[in-house]
Amino acid sequence: MEDFTSASRRALQFLHRQFGLGLWMVTRVEGDNWIVLSADDSHYGVKQGAVLKWSDSFCSRMVDGFGPKVAPDAALVAAYRDAPIGKLMTIGCYVGIPLNRADGGLFGTLCAIGPESQSPELEKQFPYIELIAELLSDILNAELKAVEATRHSERAFDAARTDFLTSLYNRRGWTGFLEQEEERCRHYGHPAAIISIDLDDLKQMNDRYGHKSGDELLNAAARAIASAVRTSDIVARTGGDEFAVLCVECDAPGAHEIEHRIRLALAERNINASLGMEMRAPAGDLCATAELADRAMYREKSAKKRDAVQQIRRMAAAHGKGIRPHIQPAVLNKSGSAASDGSVAAGT
Image 1 (cartoon, helix red, strand yellow):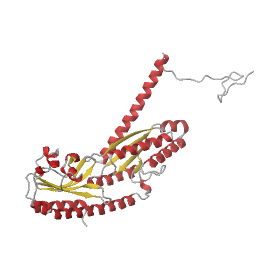
Image 2 (cartoon, rainbow, N blue to C red; image 1 turned 135 degrees about the vertical axis):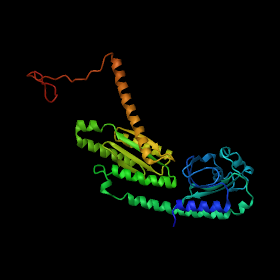
Image 3 (cartoon, helix red, strand yellow; image 1 turned 180 degrees about the vertical axis):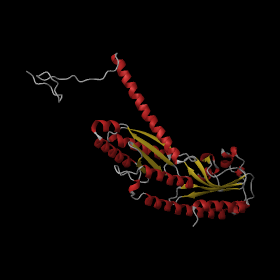
Image 4 (spheres, rainbow, N blue to C red; image 1 turned 60 degrees about the vertical axis):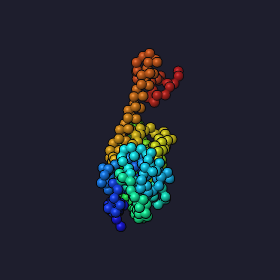
């Protein structure tokens, strides 16, 4: 069986030859992003990877039931005549069919537009176009099911990709998953997000209490983060005190919810951390997304440091004097020497 991308291209080429029109597309809908996964265009200059606004489109109105799936003369359909996309390009006719997931949810559309109106005969050809859309949906859903099976096998235990201390994925594992999921994002238009996490107190913990306590902090943080994400997400320890989460097939509201749960899980364990979250742009990539998430995290960490400095300055100003280190006065024992254990000297 052909993969979804190849099948889409062949289907669009066939439909363009058979029915003409200016542009045939297979699209993905994600929020208000209308992502062009494949295109066969002879008029409009639309290319694969283009991102249009879903709410402006004829397809959004068709899916919502405000317009027909075939409009030989789009100007005769009020919902299409008033659509903002018609102000950006000349659309005389329209064909659109939803591409649905196995659970019935909307994945995207198979659609076409042309600059001129068409004969009503176009409506008679619709069953053939609808059949192709159904076949593409079948190929898509078989492939998405196979992708899930592949993900499970990718995540099988591999010592080379596992952090020995926390049992999370290590930097090598993280990099590999970014590459694999980026390919799927490009292929299917999947949304994704990355959350970068940096522990604020690890160095102080190591310096004051020793590395064993630091390791306990890292393990507690790892458990907290893992408890807050979905089973489909990737959690890795990417550096000494740094963690990252790849939210797979996750939209912006879902990513914000996961970030919120991570913050709560860390706070419940009295773990101080700085976080940054970034959505993958439809025309971007996950490596760039990870860099942006890191920058967001460092901005939060820097803001915390600035706030701490300002608080100290306010306290010093309130006391009308500069900041001095607080030194515990030595307590003398009977012999006049300092008590080594800090206890109060015995009375006479």
